[in-house]
Image (cartoon, rainbow, N blue to C red; front, side):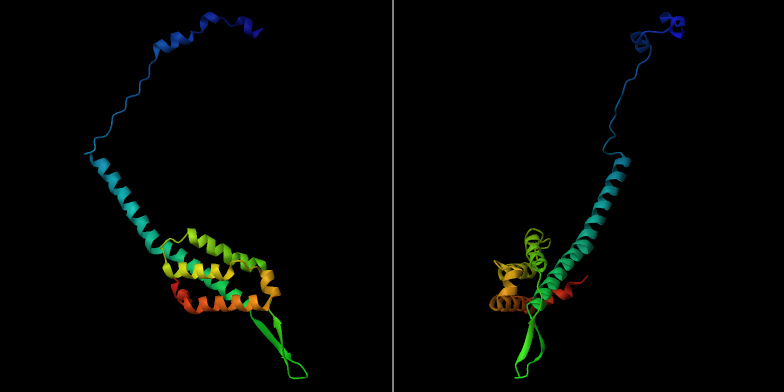
Length: 176
């Protein structure tokens, strides 16, 4: 019953309402010589300079030091795992040794670091690039299973990694 009491004549048509109101948008550009533009531009330049300085002097060196430390840790781990432990001597005087365990994840981590570094050498660090390439060469075609099963492969990998550590051992000094 409520709808019957409403009269359509009491409400205006949409076109009639639109004709009574009007909105126009005017855009006026701020002149380039206006001081407000100069303030914004100076602020933007200051921010850019600050952030570039922060990136170049703090962030990138820290990232590269972290990568170098990761390389050192994984190479030291592989070298350690490729070694043997003396567990004593037998009754006939022979020295008994035990091979240390090496896991596939350790070898995979080293290979992944080499692959990642090849595409992510932010400072074009030649020494680190050479160390990475050398480690990749030592580990090419080698798996943890190969190292576990073959004494020759174990010794070859250990010798290769030890040579890299000896040659590029200065990465420890990259701490920022």
